[in-house]
Structure formats: C-alpha cells, structure tokens
Length: 290
Image (cartoon, rainbow, N blue to C red; front, side, top):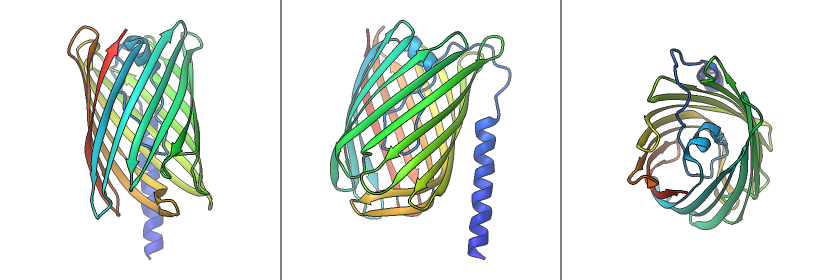
C-alpha cells in the first residue's frame, strides 16, 4: 500500500510540474523587462540565464555572501561569491566564483558561460563549471539552453535545455529542462519550468519544477517570488553519505534595488524543506554596472 501511494504521489507531482512548465500566461503587452537572477546554491537543477535580462543590465560586477541555518543537527551553510557579466555585440559572457561551507566541509566552485543571440527570435547559452575541494560540489557540470521568442512583440519565450553533473562520488545526473517566460504589461513577468533528472547509479527519475513572479522595472527595483517542488534523487551530506529519493520544497524572495544610477544591492531570503531537515537564511550582494 505504501509503494502504491508513493507511486500515485510521484505521478501527481509529475503532472503538476508539467502543467507549470507548459502553461503560458495571457494578456502580455511588453517584453522588455528582465527576469530575476540568483546566486548558485549547489543544486543539481540548472537555472537558464535570461538573454533579455543580460541585454538590459549590460555589464556589471557583483559580490556578496550568504548564511543559512539547518535543523536536525545539520549545522549551518555559509558562502561568498563574486560574479562578472560582460556584454559585447551578440554575446553576454558571465563568470562566477563561489566559496562555500556546507555539512562541515569547505570548497570553491567556478563557472564560465556565454549567452549568444542567434537572430531576432532565437538565442542560446552554454555554461561549464568545476570545483576545488568540497565533497558537496560537482567535479564537473555543464548546462546548455536553446530559447525561442514568440508572438507579435516576442513577449513569450520558451526554453529547452540539458545539463550534466558529475559529483565527486559515483553519482551522475542527466537533467532535461522545459520552461517558459512571459512578459506581461509592465511591471510583471511570469516564469515556470520543469526539470527531469535521470540520476545514476540506478537510473532514478527525479522530476521537479518551479514558478516565479517578478514585479519591477529596470534601474529602479525588482521583487521576485519563486516557489519550487519535486523529488531529489540524492543529496550528499558527507563524502560517502547521501540522502536518497525524497520530496523537497523551496521558497525564495529576491529584492534587487538600485541605490544610484549604476549600482545597488541584491537581497535574497531562502527557505528549503525536506523530510530530513529545514534550511533558511539570507544572501546579500552589491552590484555595479559599467
């Protein structure tokens, strides 16, 4: 009976995730607003970059840090990050460095990516990353996305992507992504996406999804609310210890505020829940455009 209930629960979650990823919003009138940004958190699921956002924000530097507490004796997480974005012609290059402390260990993750505009309707992105130390960080990860703009004002963007993650133990993940972004009349943006992670060993399917709503305007402020749910195939909590095949939920609130004409701050509140522990904390960063 328990296995049957678990099967029905997974099917229901999968249907909900698919509906979130594929259902477009309506009554959009403007596609000029960027979507939200977020610092990396070591998650297996990739975050597709926004070409519209990169074009509007242009080139900038951002640095900051985070602190999170975990329940059930799992300790705390801390991190510091630096990110650089450089827009030139049809390309937007981005690089980041994250120093992180999780589950009693410390490591550094670094990544480099490019978002390239192919034509007025299509753009693509590729990001590769690796790490030093930190059993919880991937030995290698690569994420690629292809994006298509639709409708008269090109205000609806659909995205398909693939990610590969090689952990520092035997785990390997192949992550498929489907998503959409819809630009309403100012100041609203609606995003949704679904991840389908096939994890080895065991060929475990772990679907997950998210929805996000953004309000604001460029050079003033953006407020983003993002909620996610789904299944995790595994989560490393030690060099040889992992939590396996469980449901989790996330809620993130982001406030990106311009203080001057070309600089401001990014404040993020994050909450995570799973059967094993809860995690909550904040991230704060300062950015400068140039």
